[in-house]
Length: 147
Image 1 (tube, rainbow, N blue to C red):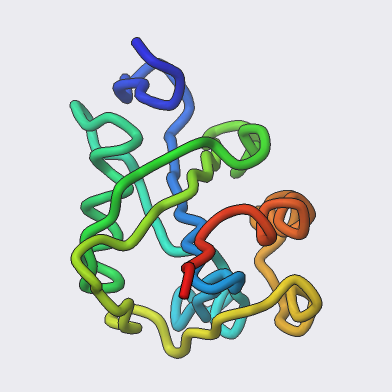
Image 2: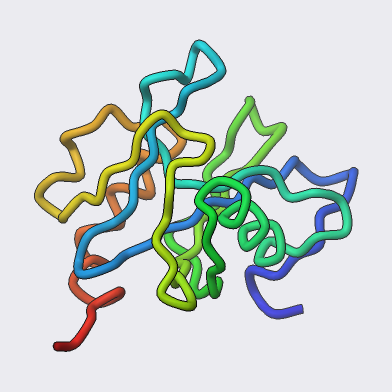
């Protein structure tokens, strides 16, 4: 199977996928509204890979549910990030919004588009921090729109 297209199984850690969506040199950050211990912290949109889904299928579904947009899932960003004492793992991918869609905060309390110099202006969830550290190098090269 191609890298990043694993099918979830019961014996492996629960896989959580998230999207790095970049438009015009800014990355989309979403503020959690729940659960209480995560409310007010910021993350990349995404969610759990359901049994039988590939990482890419799950991320495309989550972007439709959380943001109301269709995406094309691209390259991995950073390494797997262990969660829940190893019971889960976070995998992050670049995602390109399709069809001129505009992400909306359907399940988050707020959204912001952050430039490289603004990445530390929000309190990220700990799991997302290693991915945030990878972004300055990426922001110059993906999601650029030519005039």
